Image (tube, rainbow, N blue to C red; front, side, top):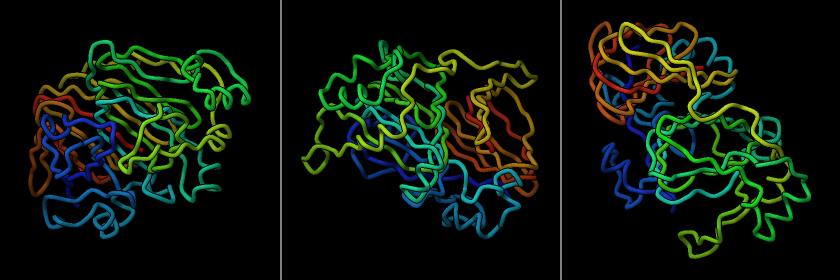
Length: 318
């Protein structure tokens, strides 16, 4: 086994911009680059390996070849590849939406639910997003306000800044606002219930569908209880610093500010490294690879890799 350098699928949702093409150099023939799925085994878009003997294979094909030992015991315990990691460029605001938990999603959608974490990589001055409600509401009021277009009156609008963190547990109402670039670590699910889309038309010229009944079923009708914004303890290290972004039963995410070199090895889980800025060289027994801004490296469980360089890196594992 060896570290895999991954090429992501790029999605062209109507609200997206072009930064993922111009600043991160992701390849797509599409005019819009809304999302790059930088770690994905999902049926709606899987990564492709670009280095080594598995070059040209999809990430699911590579992991099938290696077996559970590449995942580690924690990840292999899941009945599906557990993580989906994205870079999201919201030129325009996303729809107001909510994701179901595992129980509801498995019963109604045939896949697992979605809990996620956002790290604000960059944003325009004055950018804001929706994170839950500004007060407790009833199901009846929630549904009424969706239908009479007064939902914004009860939403919790949050000004955002570069470096902010938001933990979006399943059932949390949310919407990324315009002018925000986000790194997202989430469960490997693509189930979203759209609550409001501001009357926008889709690529077919028709209003995009809403999922009001299901959204009312799963949404937590309360103010956010998890701290957000400039959260997460930062530990100084000999090679820079490590900031804790999120830790739950589904994933752990950290921000590594690398200025030097360090070793990465986990026996219980694979490790995903996504370079948010700068450049990194990864050395391992038998070879090395280098990548810059936007680069995504999958490190199999049990493999020791030395990373060096000057970079901001999103590190994720189970």
